[in-house]
Image (cartoon, rainbow, N blue to C red; front, side, top):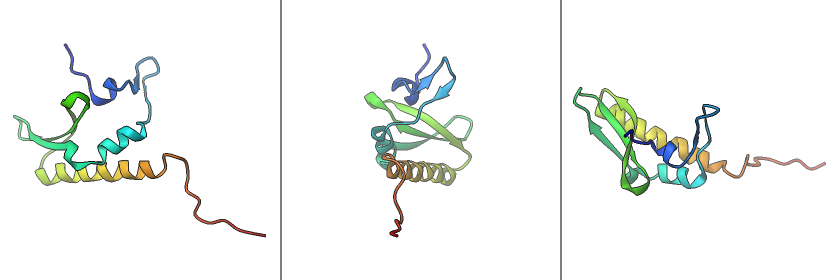
Length: 99
């Protein structure tokens, strides 16, 4: 039996079109919480970042050669999803002009 990734569990990967749908705001919020992430060391010496999925399972996300590289990858992912949450309702109006 093949383990399902976080995206397959929530039905975000469309195998017919071979495309990935964007995560929902709930999923983005989940990925912005650092307690939902961990780093594990693999037998080959690499470090793997993992995020806690539904039902408490851990899903592999990236692999890095150093612990600091793995932590930077996690921090980068957290920042990425925080930015996505800012634009979940569409673009922000920065300035309006009156005639």
